Length: 106
Image (spheres, rainbow, N blue to C red):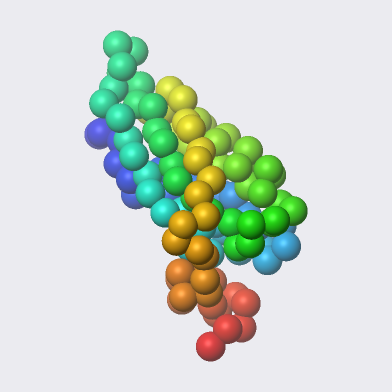
């Protein structure tokens, strides 16, 4: 089975924001997942664009490292590049219903 965006996003759910205790996918921090064609070893490089809840997020380096490790932990992945972007700015509207429930945001 070929690597797909859903697999990458599911793996990224392992990364939990240490301040909010919600995974980065449900928080809406993952913007894009770009899966490149497989290399000679059959492995895909993956580029993920993600954001932070604020530009000075103290957990930023931890979240980026966790995202890189989660993606590279997939058998089909060679190398992951995590790009932090601030456009569009993150808002609570980007969170999943599950995240809103966990944080008691209605």
